[in-house]
Amino acid sequence: MWQELGLLSCESELVATDVHRARLIQFAVRHGVPPETLAEITQRQDMLGEFLEIMGERGAARWTATDIDEIAREVGLDANVVSRIAAIVAFTDDELFYDDDIAMLRMARVALEVGFPEDALSQLMRVYVDALRRVAEAENRLFHMYVHERLRAEGVAGADLVAATQAAAGPLMPVLEPALLYFHRKAFEAALREDLLLHLRQEMGSPADEIGRVPVSILFVDLASFTPLTEAMGDAAAAEVVDRFSELVRDSCRRHEGRIVKQIGDEFMLLLPDALALLRTGLDIRARTAHEGHFPGVRLGGHAGFALYREGDYVGGDVNLAARVVGEAGRGQFLVTAGIAVTDAEQIDVQVTSLGARKLKGIAEEVELFAVAPELELRDRDIDPVCGMELAPDTETARLSWRGRDVVFCSQTCLQRFVENPELYDAGR
Image (cartoon, rainbow, N blue to C red; front, top):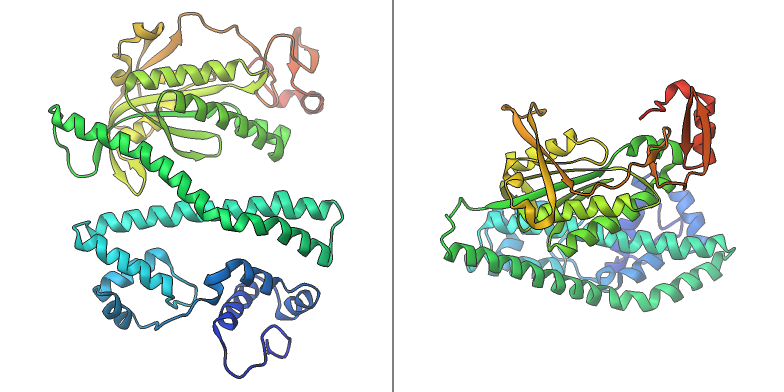
């Protein structure tokens, strides 16, 4: 059928590119594109051929046997190990093995032979798969959105669109993997420095912990009122706020030699070298966000303890506790536990005040929390009751007298939403 529609060549024997082309057709059909529609599009523009060309050597790669036992014998690994690696890597949709897959399995055998445990190798492979899938997605999506779609918006279409897109993509393709190698080398250098500290601390007499258990100083930060902000301003505007927040958080984290463990929406999990660095980073983030003209309030929560390192992440009770601490924080509030509070705060002109023991969700015992505040607090700012945006003095866009008080807004849109349903919003917050 596909040959009749012109989607595949009419040759009696399929070659590697035909197999890859068939896989692309299967993928499109599986996701709701009828073969007839795909054939019509292909007549106007052979997208299948274009994507195979972009795939380059992979698109023409030889495939080998699909039998796990045969593959295992060829690479010198146990068949069960090969099966487990295949499940992690998910080589291809049709479970074919290719030349580079065989090469990777041989590299895995080397790692195992020098004493790298299979559990650790599996964790590393999962990190590679997840992280590099995100990298590859970003490479493709950002090019599509900011190059291809921009050309379409400018009226470029048909063969001209194909030519213009290929002209832009052509110079980029050869630099992708060298760029990836560059960033990996930079990150590897930073990771080596952190590993050096682990070794030094062990030599200084730090007690040895169970494998994978490491000391951590964890800081969670997020934006207050982010959900109402998104509802009032829309996804695009909210994304711009998160982008700016990300810049501020990442820069503050870098300044204090920390790193971002993960970001989920407007929430960041940061790993800092020690409790003092955690305090400095949190104060820096809060001060910088407070100096933005129109910006949501920030919430921060910190805790020091131990965590298990798994697949590039940190897990365990102390990480969960840090997450619960930020959940207790109000707008502009920086809360920490005793492990952070006992740090010599005088070094950074900071006041730490006990708030007493609190019952935190999911934590069996009550936890004493401490509020961290610089000695000179920033001036209170007005808050838009609709989106929760904090406004620096005299920067409001609109103002309304409501029940004897002045209410300020970051935009006419928020003013209009308030006027339409004032009882919905708490003007005093």
